[in-house]
Amino acid sequence: MIELGVNVDHVATVRQARRTYEPDPVWAAVEAHLGGADGITVHLREDRRHIQDEDVRRLRELTHIKLNLEMAATEEMVAIARRIRPEMAMLVPEGRHEITTEGGLDVAAQEAKLKDTVARLADAGIRVSMFIDPDVRQVEAAARAGASVCEVHTGPYAHAFHARGRDEESPAVRADLEKVQRAGEAIRALGMRFNAGHALTYFNVEPVARLPGVRELHIGHAIVSRALFVGMREAVREMKRLIVEAARSRSA
Image (cartoon, rainbow, N blue to C red):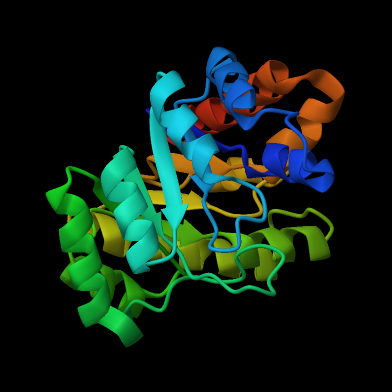
């Protein structure tokens, strides 16, 4: 069954805009769970622009679904992950001036370093995922580095979908979706779990959810945005319904 991981980073973004105590991303995580989320994702950035160390500690202590910690492959973040012990750590590229993650991790260019990082995290009992572009070369490098999960970057597909009038049958949209599918096939062939995420919305998520073998979708901004109007539980419930129905239709 396909699963939904809800990223609550941007609940913390609103809080940090005023440097106050609300809205609380931990509260948002509980509401997401009650709406049907299978996991919670947070990105503890080196600049602490939204999620803070205390948020991660409290999420580990207070949430009852799996925690996915997005992180750069740095000594500081590895030490934090080994102490907190989320169910999964997802290694991502990180730039101080980017608004959000702008592309996949170049595993092939730093394979030896990442292999050591994966080993240290796995030694603490943490499943390791890598956020990569839909490129078979990166899939193969992630497997050699010891990752057990690859999350395929769906940003290019999502941007093409928006630019082409939300037309799933547009050749440009189909081309980007097929890249994600081919990467997913390579991931599964190498014995890893195929996840996907980035820039997925209520309008573009169903074609991705229908891809063969995709296990988890990680979605944040769209859900938090919808929650402003309908509440977190309902926003998550609606997204979960869309992806589950789409996944069921691929085998119908």
